[in-house]
Length: 73
Image (cartoon, rainbow, N blue to C red; front, side):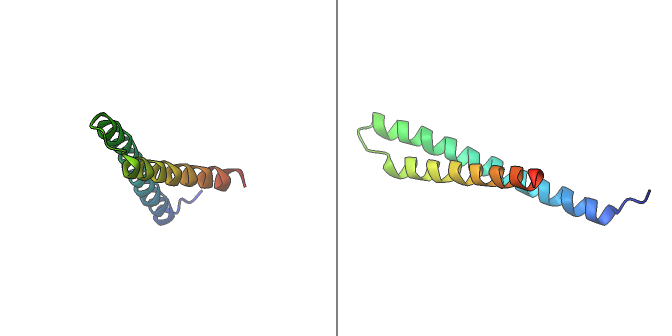
């Protein structure tokens, strides 16, 4: 058995980058939700923060669903 170390390294690098991007997006989404709560307590609407949070969570969900699609197909 021969292992293609170059291809394994590429897969590892892409997986590591994807995890970093997803974790960052998810944390921005959580931060957006917290900012909306703070804005609501201050009497503002917080719509921009909620919109940003929903967008971050939607991108996270889309990437996860694409990954599941790649594994199943």
